[in-house]
View 1: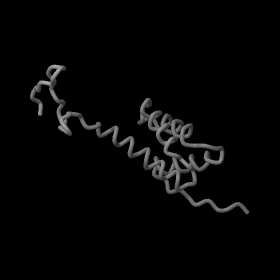
View 2 (view 1 turned 45 degrees about the vertical axis):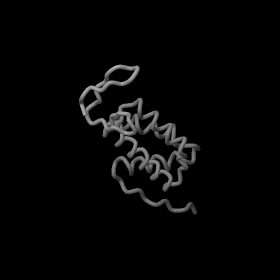
View 3 (view 1 turned 135 degrees about the horizontal axis):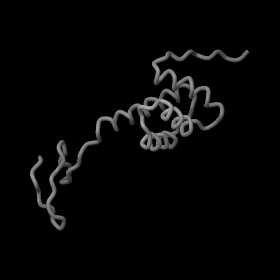
View 4 (view 1 turned 90 degrees about the vertical axis):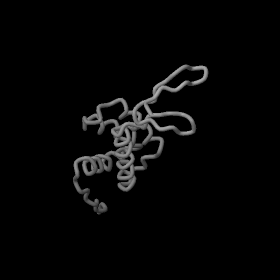
Length: 116
């Protein structure tokens, strides 16, 4: 690793630190922060599904795209990105709010009692 190699028709390149050779191609693994964001969004989507919000794969992908353009350390930005991408109906909004508070603030969600 780190030594220059000749690539036919392209010239030379220096593999990045931490690169691995897979099938003759060198690549750098995704930064840990990127992986953490993906894991966090997927975990939150599972929490939403448990709370009754559909959070389809397409909607989860839309949230990943949205948070890729945001400061993920800004809770308000993440909140609105998720609310706008993961909720499919007005019925999802209260469930989203409860799940967001529980997942990102460490609150224990309370089971809702059926309306009488």
